[in-house]
Length: 62
Image 1 (tube, rainbow, N blue to C red):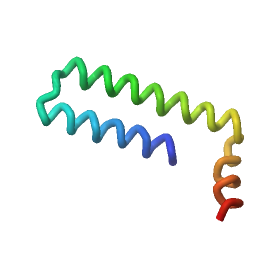
Image 2: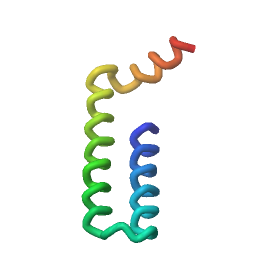
Image 3: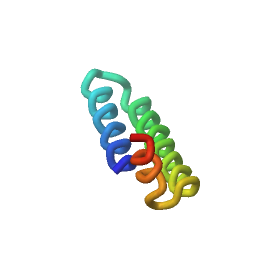
Image 4: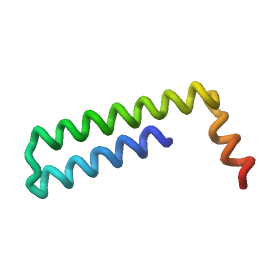
């Protein structure tokens, strides 16, 4: 869920930047960089906590 929300956020930011007149190359560079960061962060969390470990960690804090 975190991965999908992150990529959706990147897409919304990309679309907003593109429609507001930011140069196309800068928009694409931002989208690629942010998308790679979201993907890398998701894989890092999966390695650290396991497939359901992050959910368990968040549930234990409640």
